[in-house]
Image 1: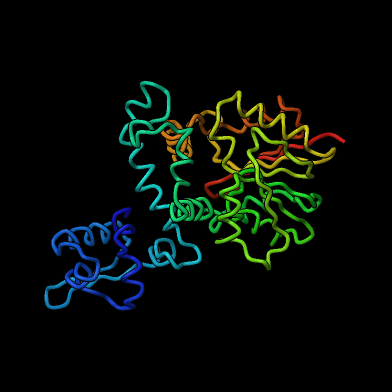
Image 2: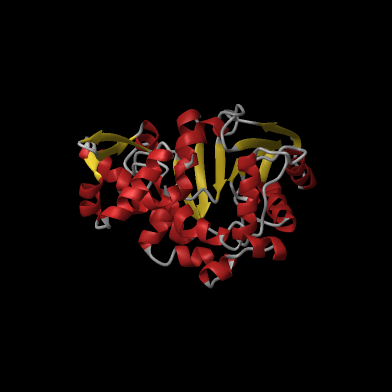
Length: 323
């Protein structure tokens, strides 16, 4: 699947709008015929492609799944996520045995840099940055509305999205709560790229502020959103950040965490268990149980913690600050 995405198989078949032979696909995508035919057959086995036999030759086309999720131009495309998994995550997983032995990120082995330096490497060129930001936004096309609507957040009018990248989740928020504004706090390079490539002038309810939420002041707000942030860090850094947010949160306000949840007994879900291993090979963090998030929020000052499973990959945890 990763290789077919990188080579452009699904995009080419989508543009062709009819079944195409392995030879034609290989010629157009500059690959060997034998290698392409084997790749296409494997994708048929994975139900990502269909094949029709004509005169003993296979003609290939996309399935509904690949048309919706793997064609780059699809509104619900996961293409950029697949490219990130292929070029970054997959390489780190090669060193999973070392990660388990050492209990730390494997970026240095995989790429010659530490996990702390990885964002600098990703942001080295505008193209790399745009691709990474597309990857970060991709999932909100699938489950953004679910996490935003897990609770009634209409009482919160001034919202800060910390580390909100190019605004994928912020767009879901303002489309649901039209009386609210969302300000995204991100690194300067991210803000500049988001304004250039992702957010249009029509989206008046979305604003940006440049800053590092660990090192720079966090402005006051009614609600703080932290989506896929807490799982990147150690317990100590999570508490440091949450306590900082608590101080900036207005009385009666709250914080919304969007994360993958483990069962309390850690028996599943398997997706969450695999995500936690991914945090091991790529970051300082881990996935957590509802009670672990509740403890982090409570120890930071928040009360009335609520946890909602969405039925999608990401779930929602809401904590409130007393009046």
